[in-house]
Amino acid sequence: MTAARADTTPIPVLLPRAGAGHQFVLYADACSGVPGAPHEATFAAVNATVARLRPQPEFICFPGDEIQGLLADDTALRAQWHHWLAREMSWLDPAIPRYHATGNHTTYDAASEAIFREALPHLPRNGPPGQEGLAYWTRRGDLLLIVVNTLWSGGGGEGRVETDWLNRTLAAHADARHKLVMGHHPIFPVNGFAGAYQREVAPADGAAFWRILARHGVIAYLCSHMLAFDVQVHAGVLQILTAGAGTAHLMPPETEYLHCVQVALDAAGLRYQTLDTAGAIREWLGWPLPEPSPLAWQALPQGAAAPALSQPNDSAPGAQFVSWRFAGITAPAGSGEAQTLLAGWDDGPGLATLWIGLLGPENRLGVLLSPQPGRSPHLWHGPPLDPDAPFAIEVAIHTGMGPGGILWRRDERSPWSSHDQRLIVGSRAPLLAAPLGARPRPARPRRSPIPGTTVAGVVAGGGAAVGIEPGAWHLLCTWRTWRCILDLMREDACLVYFA
Image 1 (cartoon, one colour):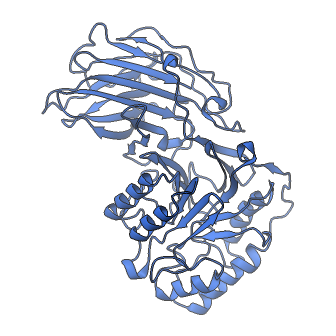
Image 2 (image 1 turned 90 degrees about the vertical axis):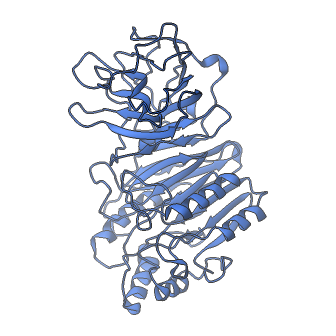
Image 3 (image 1 turned 60 degrees about the vertical axis):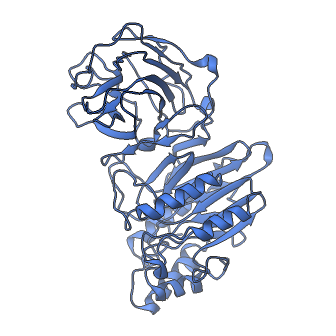
């Protein structure tokens, strides 16, 4: 590494609880390998943070784009790999295994795939036919790591992924307590940057791929490519995206940062902390989320009323977890008018800072956040609900998960999924950092709130309640006023849980 006067203060890592499990580092997209180029310095800054971890990781996962690559000159491509391995990674203890995935900068044709295999001969050759050394699996005790190739030249190139071999491999290792899958391209768009094949895996391939992960109990898909840090959950499986190992262009640069992710796995689940080049903890999560006690839910009165919940502790480190349970009867078919389930606002002239309701004739669950007065709200879409029919659904906000922390599920027996973000946000800022805004959304409810409709909830502040490690960065939920408006016709109810 080339950093001068680098901070060598040890950074404590998350360790497996009860002494049993695994801890490793996940980072990617250095796009380096060129002596003296800008990414050599930025990659060195991220490596300096990894070098400070104590203890050092058991292994490293690097889901692609180690080097700048994208060359037709094989000699020059080999030179980049040599510089990256022999110089830029020379600080790493050679006893620490490294697991790599193919990437669009490194394996973009058959010749570059051959050089990838040549540069990384230690990777297992047990992948599907034709992809040996490009896709593979490995066991580390009770941990199964499968690395897939999302751009094989023999399978259609970028944005395609093989699933038959993946399904067979997961089935053959059903005994593994921890199952992780790693590849370069995300399955779900990140920060509003979307584009099948080149930004995320093709829709048909991605849907089949995700069904397999959920069926086999995979805890997370580890990926990169989009130059950001992002976490989402779909059908109970995390998509953890990290692409901050040195590429200077970030998506978007206003909010993203260079980073690495330190991960711990144990019998209770997965935890991570995302560290920037100063070694500061910027984001963290513990998964799965704890289930609240049935006694923890609080009832709120229907209609615009004074705050009925205790205010979250806005000085406690950690994230806030807020969950609402809604039950009622949807509007008849053909009615596209917005129906408010819940809105929160303050005494100013702006829009509701938080609005949850149903949108369009398909009764699609929607969440709107308006953190900045005078700016367009950020919209998230959930599932459509059948018209003129009873429904029950749970909506949650996990403030430590960024844009992926707008969650929904059918009930406590169903897995969580992130809502689909409909525009570019990219914000790593608190999802509920601003006071709740001043008015309900301008769209009028179909009817006035019905007398007797209830809202219920629970508040618990701080990181420990949701399995999140305290750190230097925390979220402020300063709610000066809490209001609830429910207008779903008849027999409506809402429960809400805060942690």
